[in-house]
Image 1 (cartoon, rainbow over the protein chains, first blue to last red):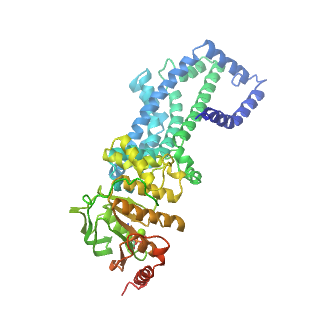
Image 2 (tube, protein in one colour):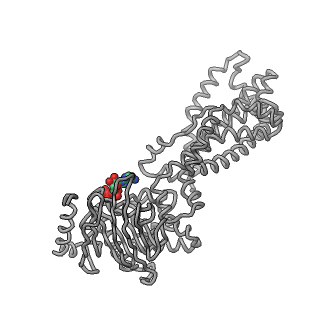
Image 3 (cartoon, chains in turn purple, blue):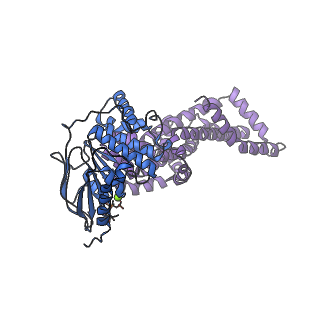
Length: 274
Length: 267
Ligand SMILES: Nc1ncnc2c1ncn2[C@@H]1O[C@H](COP(=O)(O)OP(=O)(O)OP(=O)(O)O)[C@@H](O)[C@H]1O
Ligand SMILES: [Mg+2]
């Protein structure tokens, strides 16, 4: 346990060197830029720092992130719960499958305007949009994961008369966890996009609002600064999530040489599309 | 294998027989088992042998209640087995698949007790004691994937014992282990049956193993399969790998059973 933070740090360094090089390249290439749309990176960063220190950027970001957190929490709870039920009952799955496949094909971003119109301004519609968009990958992956529980485990549980609530929480749920985590990873990316887009309409605060507001005021550097911050945020969140995943699924990744093939075998029901 | 602290003293009072009455099983109109009758007395060890595809696994699954027979029935004591019952513990050939990889060995052993409502401290203590009884003291904190095949199969046996099963059903439990490990586990089974007075039904491909372990060997053969021989093994209660297997009677039992299995099923 003592070395956990050192491990995380080393992992971070290992994954960060290429992005760092690209940033340096951008910094160099844009340094003499006179285009108003592509200002020098150094200027953007200076604006970003200024906005963080003196402006409202942090408040906007925290507001958006809290929407994301609440929306994702709803999506995870409902997605996993529904997935466990549907995945375990063959008839339920057959009834729901066509509907689910249709609904997941609707790009979540397309329903943002209608929901904002229907639910009005404030945090609720934004949370709803994030939750709805993140729900599908989690639900579909949970169903898939539960259905993939090995028959050997199911039979062992039956032979030892494991009651269903214990079976669900100590057998089916952990067995589906690798798939569920893969689903949440996709959902996180979807949620981040929706977090920003949902603030393009009917919002007075939030990072998405900050970006559109800056762009309508033609404040290019602020627009860039907000965009950069969202990108960095997404990167940090997904790195943290990968760490969490690796720790939570230690048994999955450490099970001898099979882990590599298994990891390949674990696929997402839903691509990263928005 | 030395058993220092028996989990439970022999308790013949609770022991029940396992009986099979007129059991038949068919898969989509293919008859696999036909009108089997069989009785395992309390404390008795029987081996089931037969050619591959004869229906041994099918029989064991019917005995355990995991699969309903097409006709006839299985009884534990006077009670009809329809679903898995509390008296029966199962040890699968696929030890990897039957362990929960997210639980430590001791948690795997204790898990069925949680289903029975045994309080946590008690079930963990029992699980540790049972792990010690199968020769795995002090490895309870390991995960199954940190153990060898033989160790995992010991954990599976510990799980059945902790569950308080007094009928143990094993389907080719040692089939994928090396010879030395198999011998150790065979001796473990013999010492457990002595300590605990449990009945054991073991399906095996290995005729030496069948004879070595059992009081009685059942030979299944034919399409559909029936009991074609029922061999009482009179080698006494104290057996060991070297002298018992060198006994001339051992060789006689062995060749008698081998002959039955290799005889064409038409006969
Ligand atoms: N689920 C099933 N559906 C249809 N047929 C099956 C099924 N399971 C087994 N069988 C058939 O039943 C017969 C007996 O199978 P079983 O697995 O009981 O044999 P076995 O004696 O255990 O063989 P082995 O020694 O190879 O393990 C085989 O012919 C097999 O093809
Ligand atoms: Mg078999």
